[in-house]
Length: 581
Image 1 (tube, rainbow, N blue to C red):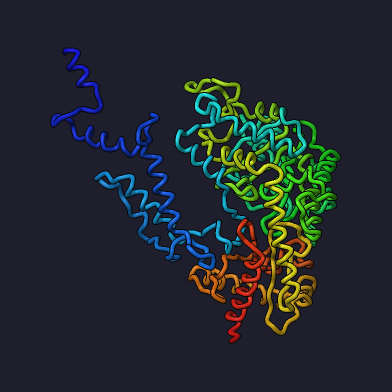
Image 2 (cartoon, helix red, strand yellow):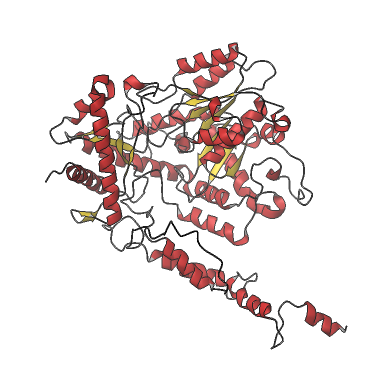
């Protein structure tokens, strides 16, 4: 075969009529892949520009409009038949596919809308969004140095910054970005089991070690204990204080004392540091002292202390704030909240590890969660595995040897790192403090209404929870009776149903775009048990829980005027539910 014939045979872009059909399709597809070279017209840049502009068309033009994207809020998925799908025979175009993607966002909640206050779902900041988007273009895999190169800096530097915030030695600490708060919980539990049960990695878990957390702990405790194999039945829940929702130290000591007496190892104690609804913070320093007092039996490792701080972590940015001079000028009502929140979260210093969700109180896009650990040498050694035959250590940092995930996109690490760099201390302080300014205003307005009561009055977190009663009822007096008196259990349950009905009505109005006084209904939610009645501390009575309408103004665009409108809508929903004309 001649050299020319060989070249013609080996090329993947034949020309002329003799070119096979696959080659024609391949040539057409080149325009739907990013250009590898500068100076050419890049279809990616053009495509992103078009896609973002099309997505922007779904945003409302006016401030008073509904807090969802587009004009059609109805679910259009045919859930019965949606899986009855097959691959097209013919190729489409990337432009056509992007149009279909944009169409899927119709009716999606608009997290940046001032009326969105349903949960801890903040709008991502621009620096983090772009950083995350860039990671998808060249796809750095932070599995190890060869496939991430300098992008590894985002994870390494994030670990140093977060360790510094916690008061740890940053060079000795570390972090891995993972798949959310559940991932952080699971990393902490695996770390704990490996430390406390040294043979478990090879022989499996053969000991019923205990996992201790509070009654306020996130339900992901069930996920983590299930998936790690320790079992959900090995969770021990500690009673919480009915006012602060914090772990009861006397009850914890009783449990630790019993475990020690029966030679039962405690794998981990998990301190909850800022819950979604109750804003509960456990006293980490006190927990550490009890763990030192009641160590595990001989033959087991030291109990692992983890802080589930994925919501509450960001209050640590007030570590250097001068609360006396108050340089950012927070109101005298908000200043004590900020100081109390910092004093509550600074206890993570005593933990072995803590979790961070940048996509919660870090104002970043999903998913950007970091599991931060104090002793990098211990963590990375006891969880290390053998080297892969096809992955070579090309840099000093190769987390593939100890991470749960093998392939790890840099999306979260770049988003989290970009947020830290963009906000700095003052940015975080201003955003968080601004939310609390709105909260204080809202609580003052609620206090003026005889039929409403703020039910998390003593909480200093970002959420406001309220109950609204029929017009002729003194809300504050009635709530106190329902909270404290078992004889008022029936009233509690009845008004819980009213609260849920109001929440459902508000959601219905939000979705339908219903307007009250010329402005659409806000996107609110409700809690079905942020705390228990005082006579139900063991939580055995599933109905003796406190329901509340939830207002979570995480949005930087939300104003006091929006707070007023939300209260007006809550009253209107109450009246419609009760058929009051």
